[in-house]
Amino acid sequence: MACVRVGISGWRYAPWRGSFYPRGLPQRRELEFVAARMASVEINGSFYSLQRPARYRAWYGQTPPDFVFAVKGGRFITHLKKLVDVGTPLANFFASGPLALEDKLGPILWQLPPQLPFDAARIDAFLRQLPRTTTEAARLATKHDGRLKDDDTWTTTDADRPLRHAMEVRHVSYLDPAFAALLREHGVGMVVADTAGKWPMLEDVTADFVYVRLHGDVELYVSGYSAAALDAWAEKIRRWHGDGRDVYVYFDNDVKVRAPVDAMALAARLPDVGAQPSGVAV
Image (tube, rainbow, N blue to C red; front, side, top):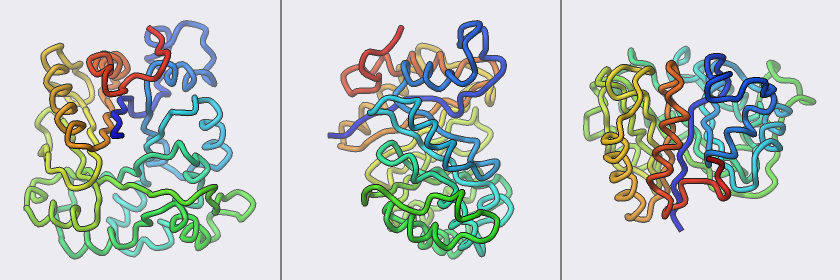
């Protein structure tokens, strides 16, 4: 059955301590606190630097069995290399530990920089390099270079599972229907990104799942979502889910501690599609 997972992008934010997180809660228990209230989290530390397998294993152990992590691909690949000549960087990324999440590994997010316009050949070449199963990802991970030592890598998988990818874009040229066609050809999800109008919001469904990032609808990364706005998003999610697609939704409006509040409020509107974890804390 299709599922809906609503969560937040990242969870370690100092302003949340004493507001969303209770005073005195140890930092090491923050993910556990989140996982009792939401069904998923987007790991964004992996965007800034390669993580380590031990860290992924710790996150695995701090969350319940039905929890899912989305993992943000490295900016070295998307922003510095701009998707070109990325065979080894992709190997390094997968060797750094995402596969250690095992059955809790959800979609991989590839966020492109605002300065990168649509180039069909560039996008097509990149998408062709992405592993489509965890077995393929493990095989790719063995090709990592010396940046990662063999004794601090994860290059195996406990089972052969499909691996999903989603792409978020921030340039108006991606409104070209050829972009959606390319994603559809490769089975890659087009990210529906609400950015308060700063960048285009594309809503083409290009895969068997939908990936949504909510950065704020009035002020980027700052504004919270009104009850009416959350109702509207809940309606869209029901429609996607009703078409038989899994839906992943992550709030990234973290500046004013709105992300966790909005995520829980949206999930509460969708109890019949499994958007809340079982035994959710209130």
